[in-house]
Each structure stands twice: as structure tokens, then as C-alpha cells.
Length: 464
Image 1: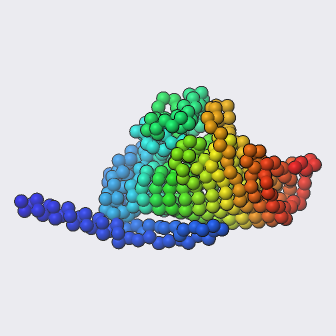
Image 2: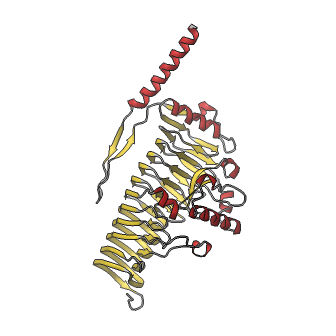
Image 3: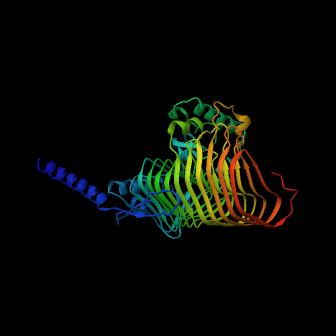
């Protein structure tokens, strides 16, 4: 009886200690300036206690599987009220890393997390999304679902093996058939639990980092080298900071950072070197996004450098939940991109794009400095039918103080005749050399242009 009593008291005291540790820690806030109201961003102050993965059985090396050891350290950290899960210097081979709340995954300098590229290691499937459509797919390499106060920090590196994933970059018939199947299920309201895509030859690649429905996120200081799919995907997340990142991923669909149906984020002081778009704002696709009804909003991107990518700032094309209050400023793109500032949608998306600002940008060469295209369907144009037509409302788009070395065109704005674009303001934009044409505009109600200039024009007669 006494032993039971003492055991119960010990359990109660342990529980009280855990709760005390959790609540003793507060948040600090970061106030972010923007041309729209924006809440201060909260950063969780993690308890000063470390959970080193070697204490849970991790063994350094390229072949030792440390998946269970890392999971055990994360579980212990979470149960103790939070802290740092430490990846020491060295190479640590693992399968997927699944977060729990109040955990800071800390990568020491010269620490390398080497992820398996065996798809079987990423089963069972988890709830995720593929290009704006929710489904169950292979686990992302780093995954969090409905967590609060999560971080990856330090000066180490995430570096997946790519032998298998790079073979999956191709899109053979079996893969395209799987995309058609998922699109049809999403368009006909098949429950997400029934959209099981990690089967057969579907080969829907997992994200590198996918945080799903999380709060208070911090990604700070570490490096990423390559990714199977989108590199950093913050999906339906509320509040966070991405800063001091060094991201290189040159494979197919290797966006740098995708914020989708997320809100209240700051991205700053990052370097992106991508095989696709660099910074991308999204809000889901078609019926899934209309069901979730969660805009992507209140996001500031500043002091970033994009060394390579398709776009510096991309909006869409998955944007059916609506996108508003986005501000990119004081960024550089010194080499080449396809488009500096690109808004893309189509007649299936619906939703809205409003209050989008780009300011104080210096850049190298590009096809377009600024483009709006309301008919971007990529492979989906003929792959699947239009189940429902909804036109996107676009209004309040601003580009100011931009300097580019060369562009095929300064701007091309292609609205939808059924719902023309509203106000677009383009001010103080200079291109040293224009190669094809100055501007083309169709189906836009109000273009305000001030001090748009160029030094050299090598194109044909201007066509408006």
C-alpha cells in the first residue's frame, strides 16, 4: 500500500513538474512592419534542457538507421515539457522525423541528417497534400501534424539521399493516372481518408519539410541540400518565422518555401537556389480549398537572396482559398529567373488575390519582371475536365522600386474577360535592356504606371 502511494505521489509530482516547465516558458514577440495590419509573431522560449539523440541509441554513420532513436528523443522532450532534441556533429542516417509539440530539433554545426530514399521507410502514409489537394501519401521526410511550438535550428544540414527520388522526377503514365485519380476524388468530395496515394507506381514524391496545421513555427539557421518535392511546405500553419536559411534544391518541383493557407509569417535573411519557384504563396486547389475556407494571409518576405529559381515571388496557381496581405521587400535576384513577380490562376480556381506588394528589388535577367496570367493550367489543361468554373478576383497589386539588368518584357498582364483584374500599380521600375516588348495588357480595369523606364530596347514595335 505504501509503495503504491509513493508511486502515485511520484507520478503526480512528475506531472506537476512537466506542466510547470511548460508554463514557466513564455513567448517573445517580433513586430513586423507591413502595409497592412499584422499581429506580432510569437516565438516560443524553449526550456533549457537537451535531449541528445545518442542518449537514446543513435549511432553515427551513413548506414545505421536512427529513426527510432530520434523518435525516442522527441518523445522524451515532449513529455518533459519541451526543449532541444540535439543532433550532434557527424552524419546521422534516418527515415522520417515526426515532430511533437514544444520540440526544437537542434542541428549542431557539422551535423548532417542523411535521409533514406527507400519509399517503404515512409510508410504508413500520413495526411498531407499534393499540389493543393489533400490526401494520404508517403510521410514527408520531416513531418508535423497539429503541433504547437516546433522548431528546427542550428548550423547543421538536412541532406536526403536522392537516388530513388530523382528517378521519380519523371512523370510516366502511371504517375499521371494517379494525379487524375486524386484530382477526380478531390473534385467529387471523396473523403480525404479514402485518398490513399502511396500505392503501386503512383510515385507521388514526399515533401522534405511539411508542417501541417501547426502553430508557432521557427526554422532558423540550418542548410538544406536537395529535396524529393517541395522543400519547405507550411500548410495551414498559424504564426512563425523562417530565417537565415540556406536552401539548395534543383530537382523537379523543388520550390524553396511554400506557404499554403497559412497566416502571420515572416521570412527573412534567407538564400534560395531552386529548380522551381523560390518563395511561393498558395491557398489550396478548387473544392478542397473551398471546403477548408482558409486564406493565406499576412506574410512578409524581406532581405532574401534568390540565386536561381523560376520566380522570385510566385502567387498561386493553387490559390482557391484566397491570398491577401503579402509583402516582399528589399530582396535580390542577382542572376536569372523566369519571372520576378508572377500571379497565376485559372478558371477553375475561384478565390481571390488582393493586397500583394513587391518593393525595393534588384535583379539580373528574366523573361518578365511582372506577370499576371489567369489561364495557367500546366499539364492539367487536358489531363482532367473542368468540374466547376469559378473566376479569381484580383485587385490591389503593387510593384515599386525595382531595378533589373534585362528582361524580355517589363510587364504582361492577362486578366480574365469574365472578371477583369482591378487595380494594378507599377511605379519606379527600370530595366536596363528590354529584349522583346515593353508591356502588354488585357482585361485589366485600372493600371497605374509611373516612372517605368528602360535604357536599351532591342525588341519589335511595342504592342499593347
